[in-house]
Image (cartoon, rainbow, N blue to C red):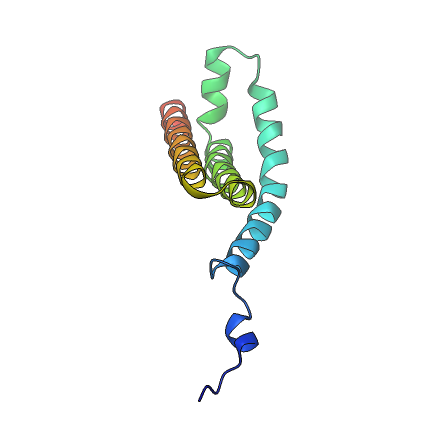
Length: 123
């Protein structure tokens, strides 16, 4: 005899069992990016079109370097999770698995490249 109903067992879980956590992660990261992106655009806009010495001087300060690092990490991770949701909605089978793996490898490669470039500029 079951003491818990089917509805109670299903509350808080999506089809994969982690839909609520994914939704909240996307909401919180979007709220954080709402503050990080304008700050990053301002910093990057000031450095855009400048000579190498000016760019090096801008990103050698801790605040622009930290904001840029946060933008790289959280922006690309948010993008990757959004792409994963998109593919789960529109693809099935091997296409789904392969596309998620390729996009994850691509976004982590972009993160590594961006953070390496930022470290070369900031240090």
